[in-house]
Image 1: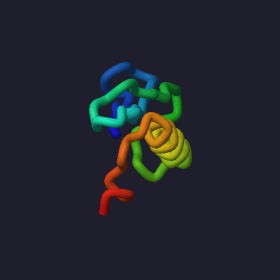
Image 2: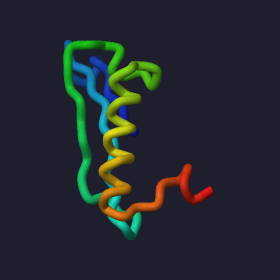
Image 3: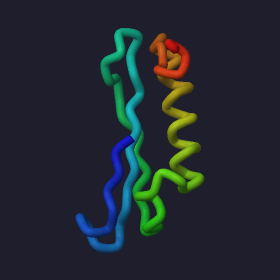
Image 4: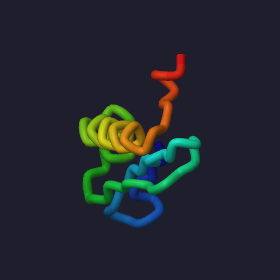
Length: 70
């Protein structure tokens, strides 16, 4: 996950997560951008939803996620 607080673009925060291909390389990234300063915190509910979405998409691409590989 990558976070950007409103210090980069005043009034906007963002969080981005990768979607991985079967070989572990990034196939895409999904990003949430908005005025909510809390987006830049890992505890925000939208961050958990974003991670779940990207994990599901990665599995659909055949990626083995860290939690699954262990």
